[in-house]
Amino acid sequence: QVQLVESGGGLVQPGGSLRLSCAASGRIFSTNVMGWYRQAPGKERERIAAISSGGSTNYADSVKGRFTISRDNAKNTVYLQMNSLKPEDTAVYYCNVVEIRTTNMYWGQGTQVTVSL
Image (cartoon, rainbow, N blue to C red; front, side):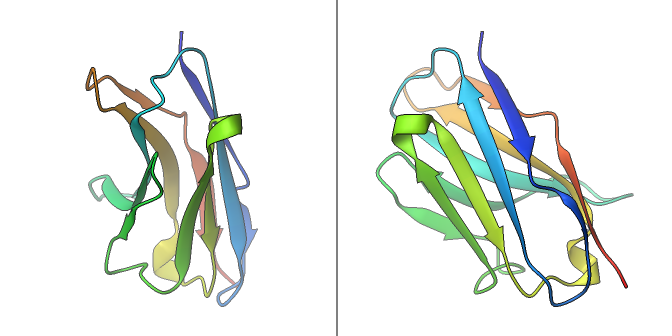
């Protein structure tokens, strides 16, 4: 059974930084895409960053230039470095893995990020 466990959320002041981690355990096909989504109160979940097993990345316009996604394939872990945080970045952040071969999709439980004075 595949499990994703996020960590690193918390409260930070505007302009600050946080680093989220998501460790995947269980059997996952090595060819996959790992991503980060977020959901703010009253809003739909949105994808903000993704990275393929080959290292290709893409970002939502709202976080481009401020957030960096990376992964360690040996550890089945994906990271999200968040800099220059804004109050509008406040949301629950979820990690996600999609297996290319099977299209199976797995989600973490979410971690709260709050940007406030």
